[in-house]
Length: 229
Image 1: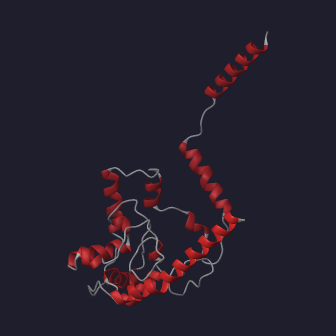
Image 2: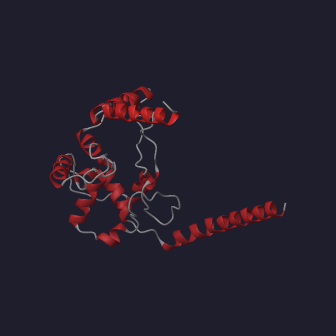
């Protein structure tokens, strides 16, 4: 038997063995992944391993692997989460926008090193733009700048926005995690609706624009020196 015949037989045997191998099911893969994930974390402070446990909504959305849920499943998810929304007993949906801005800026409160009894921030700027005075904001979520101007100020809009902040899954199934603390929602809603004065935006541009331009000039000069050398 020549070398070529041996390679053909080896390749054929390999293909047959691969065809006979049973691939693990999605349930097996999920179970192993969950076990590995829990083995990788240690409880510390207020951050317990229970944070790795998914609720019904999270399990339903994870099973879709990033796909849009079918209409009937989405309706069930939204109905279940809408039932968790607690509107203020006094009917007041708007609060102090200045306190709302502080909450939107604050990202501490739920970390393992934070005091569980202390205030909890919403970290809204991690995903959204709210005001022009803040230059560092995320874009994974839609811009909320001048939200009140673009959406209006009717009772219906206020009620929808309040519920959306309280639990986003109640309106868009499998959406990103939302702020779920009732006492923060009126202030956050007011903060979203507030329009930053033009003088604050202009001051921010004057303050940071020159720094950015100077930094660009320094980088350009350094690059030219390296090229010359």
